[in-house]
Length: 183
Image (cartoon, rainbow, N blue to C red; front, top):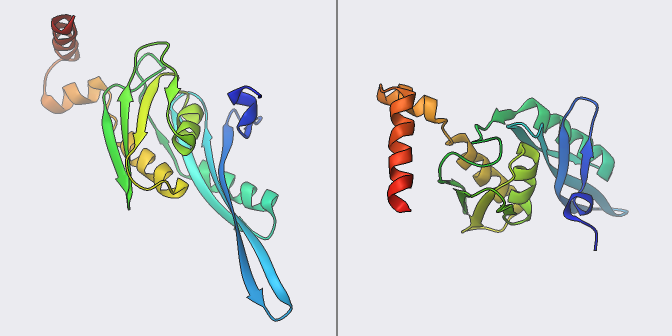
C-alpha cells in the first residue's frame, strides 16, 4: 500500500498551490442515440500555509472537469489562522445542509484524524495535527462545505483580544492559567 501522500491525488504546481481531488461523479443524460456521460469534480486547493479553497467543475471529460474545479477553487480562497503553523486555535463546529462537522485542536504529533473529504482540506491548508468528526451527511460536497464553514469561524487570539478590548498578553496569560490548572 502506498503512503498517504502518494495515494491521494496531490499535485504541486509552479504557483505554490497544492490541489487535491476529493470526488468525481459521473452523470448520464439519456438522449435519442443512447447515453451522454458527463463528469463533475470536487477539488480542494491550498498553499500549505493557511490559505485554502474548494471548487466544483463539470465537463464531458474528467481532466477538463478537474481543471474547471481547480480554477474555481483558486478564485474563492479563505485564510485560516493556525496555531504554531500546525493546528487550530480552538475547537469549532460547522454545518452545511445535513452535513455537520466537529473540529478539535490536537497536540503535536497527533496527525490528521479525519475522514476523506475533510482530510483533503486539512492537508491542503497545511494543518498537521487535528481531530475531526463528521456527524451528519457523508456526502463529500456537504462535508467539504461544512468544514469550510467551521474554518471560517476560526479566530486568532489577537482578534479575540481586540474584540473583547483587552491586551493579547492578558488573554495568553489566562490561557496559560487554564492549561496549568488542568495538569
